[in-house]
Image 1 (cartoon, helix red, strand yellow):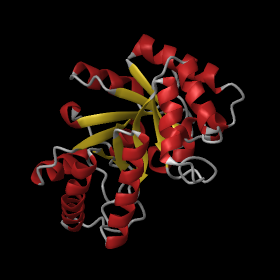
Image 2 (cartoon, helix red, strand yellow; image 1 turned 120 degrees about the vertical axis):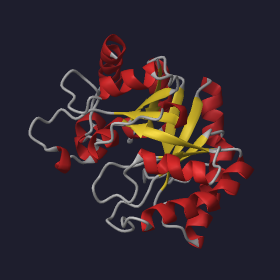
Image 3 (cartoon, one colour; image 1 turned 90 degrees about the vertical axis):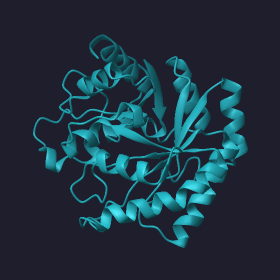
Length: 266
């Protein structure tokens, strides 16, 4: 298994410390984010600095997370895409995650599919020019404009988008209630667990997402096993949002325990 660390695992860490955390776990792949106010990218850290820090440690940046509201296409979104793609290219990232609108808008049947195809059509030459992969991430929330990986795959194929792959997020896959997996289209897997016994699936939010253990209610182990059995051999990237993870005094120990559990059971 190839594990990776999303910066959301330890969002308060300076980037060098975050990279060293990954190395301490034998992990050589990370995702950086553009939504952490006091950290790279939003703190103004130059892309060249990120590249130097990762190259010094022989760590691969598998993605920048993310271009938000990508399927609400506009000239402003195009400018944002170009800026993030330039940063991704300059820091050495392989991919840019694409996150759909998640505010209840654009959900109507017909409208959401057309908006998705339009955005992918416009993004395709930008990604091709940058030499970067676009990772489309459906979200399972009921208010999201792109919940279905099936719809994402159909749109990718309709625009001839070989530059696009899927993110299979075990949390969002569970919420969406979508049984089908698409290992051949999957470029990255985000893993997290929900252990709160009282929260209903409809009420689950990012704040409930912790590390994967035996109490996980998402079926993350089963999802990983199914993807691997179907041929997926890419990264499994930890993406917990729970404050209980972010405030750990020894995140490395907790991550080792989760890694050991996944290796033993998936």
